Length: 175
Ligand code: AR6
Image (cartoon, rainbow, N blue to C red; front, top):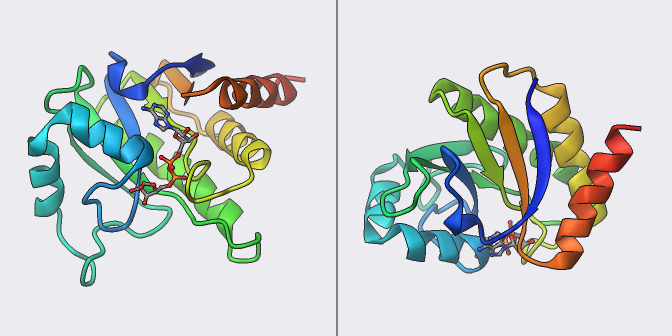
């Protein structure tokens, strides 16, 4: 069974097989964790993202979907890019789309024999998803997926508030 753990860290420093990027649908970088991952991985990452096919002009990954690239200068072998929903009040299927991000990232990880995977708090920054609810959806989705080859999933927080929210969601789900 996959072990789920909260971790306070800069996700770009982790030595897991893969790290997840909270990207946007262009996959061409941005601010927040996306910017940090591109800076740490080097310009090869942007070049690899550019090579991913466009689904429509400017869109390489729909909200809720995921794509994989090498990690280049990162310690992680892969970056799994997923696009979280922008919070619009809850009536635009944001919860289902966020759950899809976690599920599709895990599916891609399993296809690439990833044993250790690290997620940032997708959509919890500039996309403004309510954080407590986002953590609950992430933990519930990850616990419901049976991927025996995936040994560990780290729920990564940059700041203390997010770390405590991840821990609370883990505690709630094991009650
Ligand atoms: N390590 C771990 N977590 C981090 C790091 C880091 N180095 N840096 C930030 N976080 P955000 P979103 C946390 O805004 O809401 C980008 O511009 C951060 O504290 O990065 O999904 C993309 O290109 C927060 O808890 O992602 C998109 O346009 C969490 O990561 C847009 O932002 C997510 O915050 C995506 O917005």
